[in-house]
Image (cartoon, rainbow, N blue to C red; front, side, top):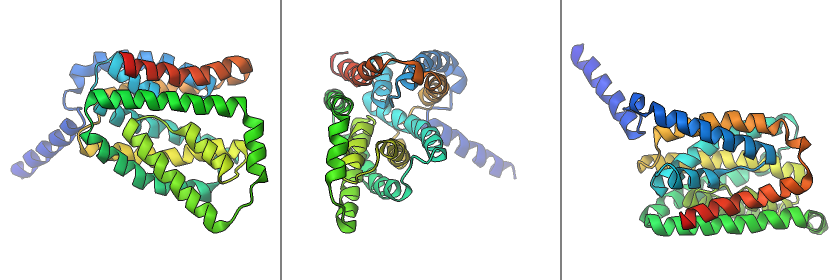
Amino acid sequence: MANRAAVGRSIRRTALADLGLSGLGDNLGLILALTLITFALGVLLGFVGAGGAGLTVALLTSVFGLPVHQAIGTGLVAMCFVSVAGAASHYRQGNIAVRAGVIVGLAGVVGAVAGANFGQGIPDGTLKLLAGSALWVLALLVWLRTRYADRILALAASGSGHPRRDLILAVALGLFGGVASAFFGVGMAPLLQLGLLTALRLPLRQSVGTTMLTLIFVSLSGGISMAFHGDVSGPHLIGTVLGLASGSYLGARYTGSAPRAVLRTALVGTPMLAGGMLIFL
């Protein structure tokens, strides 16, 4: 009986060590500092309606010195918690096309696992440069969506749908979005939203809500894959989730009071800033 208890304790210690939680008491200062900083970041992100996965990765690497592979894995798991909360809110408001979200999300699972595994062979410096560049591309997509939203919606409305074509496009969108999310560690929300708008012709509100649903699949599968490679830091994850979740909830309550120009600038500026941090810091 004593041997069985000892084996149980050994298994629990091994599991905690794999996530970096075995010395949790020694990391309370780190968790507190990260919670406070990401709370302020979460207030900003919730206020402007941005996802912030890329900025989280940039913060973990540039400020807290976490290797980029671990920052990506930790950021993916943190993004899963944020996506669940966001998707639940959108579902209550009827802003999710469930069938489209599940198809894109399941394809995203395959892509995320592939992206997480492929990224293991990329050196840290190269991966930071690629992730920073990807964030700048996302900033361009956000700018296009905010500046030309009416034209994009008109283009989507003029298209004619076909069930087989829509299925192929949904799978392709999920695969590409999943690979990019897990490889670069950045939320591909702008890409997914544009794809759902133009390729699948979802209304704007449904494209936003459905994107949150797909990101649950992508971030969870990508985060689990990174965890198998030892690339999720438990203390950093705890601090990030606590700060972002509480800050985003508070910031989202005041989104309606922000001038449109401020929101547009912040939406574009956030991935631009994160990309610069990854490339130059």
